[in-house]
Image (cartoon, rainbow, N blue to C red):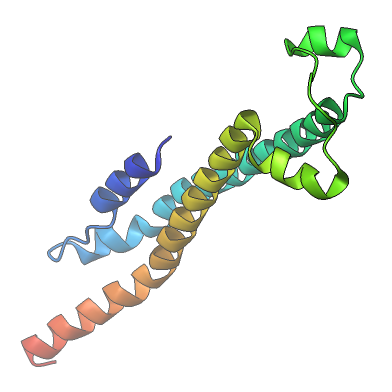
Amino acid sequence: MKVEEVVDMWEQDSAIDDNHLDTSSITTPKLHAKYLKLLIDSKIRKAKCTADYNQLRQLKFRYYRGEMTRDELKELGWEQWQYNKPLKAEMDEFLKGDADLIKLDARIEYMETMIYTLESILTQIKARDWQIRNAISYKQFLAGS
């Protein structure tokens, strides 16, 4: 699921019907469960992406050092590194510029954005009952109670 889809869903789910505050209050636990499930799924996917990134980073480290066997290279579909071995001080720059690692890093950043979005939505859901209670109190005030 994309961040934009989650934001669109929340835009619809966040609406509180002023005429049916009781129904809006009852839906709060369902909304919490829905977005909590999405948050848990996103955190699990981020953990997997991070593990994949770390594993690939280790392979790329060995690749640039020329330490991989022909079988490993063939299995990964990579050609033998033909240039000089980077020094340890240079290795970080090689890894930062590696296209495969950049793609995985971008996925991790995207997952962090998704997690931030879902955590923000859950914070609003936690405040939802207070907002509904406040709306009820305001309606009572207007009615003269």
